[in-house]
Image 1 (cartoon, helix red, strand yellow):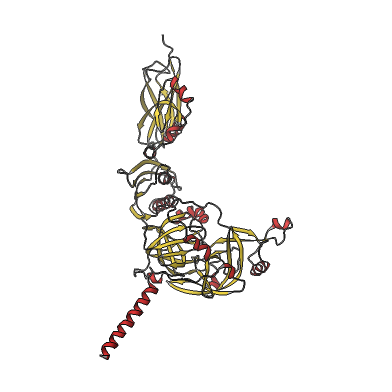
Image 2 (cartoon, one colour; image 1 turned 30 degrees about the vertical axis):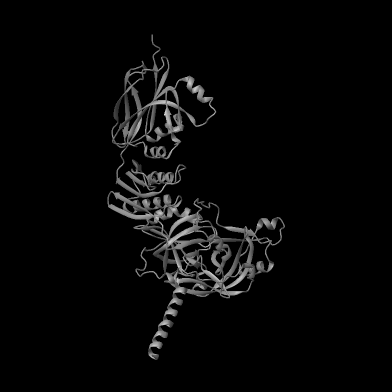
Length: 614
């Protein structure tokens, strides 16, 4: 009997211990973290921070409060700390530490987030946890995103700050003199430039030349691109270890090409996490994949130390990207855009990758991916012809948007890529409807030849013509390094042209044709519906076409994206006096296209005169 009671007692005890462990460790249970307000913090206070210096092991470093800058940003303060311990004495602030939680008396005060160019030691700005918590309160229904184009440098006069704080900062060598203030006899002519710690953008599969071209944009966004391999650990992720101090990766592209922003988790409440302490891009409400990260090592550098890390397993998504924090949610996932780039040339290569669905990031990443694929497989300097075919599959639409054209590229800019990126940007930012791209497929056929021809002149069979006449144009072309070629084209003079008038005949390439269209029918380029927009995107003038335009002395108008040519003068007068906008002038013309074997460039015009008649 006693044995049975003992067994039952041990079973109940084990059950209680197990349930207690589940309550504490389960990621779905909120674990209270005590916090300390900014008003409780004074210079000289000491504490510790948490971050990963190697692997996934969270380590502790020491901090000492230098002071608090009051109202540093509107309605927000900034805590200044000096960090020591671990590799920090040699490395200074490390890119990838953004979000590292800082504690005083075991109370969370905020996240390491900012640094100074003039600092000689690991001195950081800490975003207060109260400021970061506000991001968690943002309405999840907000859908509009706004890209912060302003400078990320925070700079302010220290005139209004505590003199003890100023003296402390001066002793650390992180103040510089404000000449303007000095010349105007202001007291304490010092300012402090505070910038978000650079975010390591760990990339793989990219050509270094593509990264170099994007470096001005990366710098503006506060990203520090660093080439590494894509692979992470194959071991399953322990979500219980994804706690404050753990490394976090925000993946923006993955597959044969990959890029991930690396930071640190600051706070976790159940499945909700706060990280970084500053924005990744500051797009507001967003939808980006969130993963664990593995740190290989710290690369120490005088220009800026960085965590060499790789993304691990996807565990959720980032839902908010705002000034003071990034918010993530474990267990909810984002749908990325499957992309395929096929290069046909000296090498036949296919790249498969996924890109985040974002108005700002998607076009940028597509451009980076395509440029890298082209640079990695084809020559970048020298003459080449590029045949681009693009399919964009849109949710809710049976047929994909199709764009195809041929370009000549003298190198090394790969300018035809713009013609791929622009339609994607237009679709994602159109005013008619929210557009969800399901997939993107590009086929680029490249030949190392220059197959171009310029338009030299036009010869007509006669200059004085009558309505209904058919005349012969001889268009003289000069193919590159070849003999002149004459292209005969027959055109018919309209029956209803006015006697005694003149008409203008223009022979041109695709670019000039579009320019003339903008001048003769500007309203045609302003679509009034999503389908009209797609028609405009797909209506790409083939660069191999020789285009003949006959401009007539007839006027019409374009209304709501539709052409109404050759309208009576009485109707045009009524429309000009209408109390409703939306109509634009239309100059009537006849267009004829002749397909050639060359990429055409140039423009020539000639006037024909209509006989006065009997």
